[in-house]
Length: 207
Image (cartoon, rainbow, N blue to C red; front, top):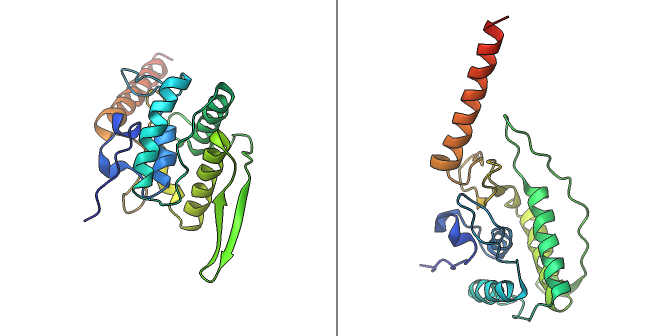
């Protein structure tokens, strides 16, 4: 039996079964470094020091799943800004729409990285290229491309509750989950929507 990787950022928001497989789990962990939830958790990319601690732990988890994982590398201020921008752009692109509170999807600016294509007897594959934050950005985009071809990227979602926005991996059969946690995020949104409908009906009955 394969032991699940311990993703330090994602562990703050959901159970093990909600984490993405393989290298996509690192992408999810990057998304969950943000200040999310209620009460809000700290932003792990707020400073070079906290980002370094998260990165060391997250790459250690990744190394148990992917032998091609990028090695730990110190982040400077510019690299931290680039990594934070990537995280926020990905959250915008992956945001899940909600019927009562629509969220624009696919509106993030294009994310450009460099990569190397290696070809051998087993086929062609993309390999990350660069150093520091650029190597991480390259790895993340390669994982997203691989997940697209494997048809698993659609399962990496951002909670439809605007007060949460935690990233989770939807393992439901029909890939229909909207909430990071249906018992908290889902109920909160449903109650809010219900009250809004009741208010509208009350106003309508006065006219």
